[in-house]
Amino acid sequence: MSERYFAAKSKDMNTRRKFLRQTLLGSLAVGNAGRLFDQLDINAPNVKNAFPVVISTWGPNIKANAAAWQVLSSGGYALDAIETGIHVPEANPEDTSVGYGGYPDRDGHVTLDACIMNEKGMAGCVTFLEHIMHPISVARKVMENTPHVIMSGDGALQFALDQGFKKENLLTKEAKKAWDLWKIEAKYEPVINVERHDTIGMLAMDMQQRLCGGCSTSGLAFKMHGRVGDSPVIGAGLFVDNEVGAAVCTGLGEMVLRTVGSFLVVEEMRRGKSPQKAVEIAIKRIVKKYPEQSKDAQVAFIALDRKGRHGAYSIHPGFNYVLYQDGENRIIESTSLLDK
Ligand code: SD4
Image (tube, rainbow, N blue to C red; front, side):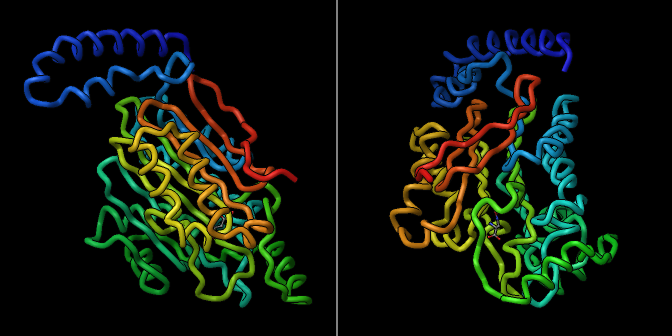
């Protein structure tokens, strides 16, 4: 990102701040002051430019973050950044938890879950979708081209084909080999931090402070046929409220579904908690509620507020995430509640 871009942006910001200050007194009369104060306080993180910003679950998604940043840094829409970024792992056959190359369910089907949510609170989701490489884009079509929020299974596939998506075989040779090996014991055991590249959850805020999010996954490897996780469920796997902030998560979806985790994180931010405090509250809630299951299962949240502050926290060590902010794309190790 060029120096010139930052200089131009901070000049814009100064002009914008001046304008906001000038209009603030007038706004007091119409009860709008809180919102304007919030907008003035954009530099809360210790960086020159708090936004645009994009944050994703798991270190290997550094390439997805870079693709999203391309959109954001040229003044693009956060929702386009999310879709572009998430396409990267969805098309990567080496990513065994997302899209093409994702591990199948116990019957050998690659079934995908995804959702997307924009700054207006609109959302689209697909669950139990087969044969389509980019479920995030189908989710966006559900949001934009239907009166519905969730489309599932064969209906979602039919809808995708009607929208012009191509039917493909998503089961790679490697994923099939892993499935064949799994069948020898056929034991269902979620593995903590499996290979450290898992479900992609991504949150982005663009230059116009529009906050959007998305999530895409093939779900738990070798799950029961028909199982849907938290990732495509608004409030569980993802929640965005442009007035407050956004949260997304990765890990054992059943524990997140039962606690409506991402909604909880955003509501804690609404009550004034920082993104870091909010994700810690959500993880502690899960562990308190399910102490036994938490011993062997990972859940991790990332959160972003509209000031550009972020937070990340997991049950177990080993979770990492990627933050692209102020021109720098960094992999960061998350803190966690339990030690190993
Ligand atoms: C699920 N939450 O299907 C997803 C999987 C995941 O890290 O995020 N794994 O339960």
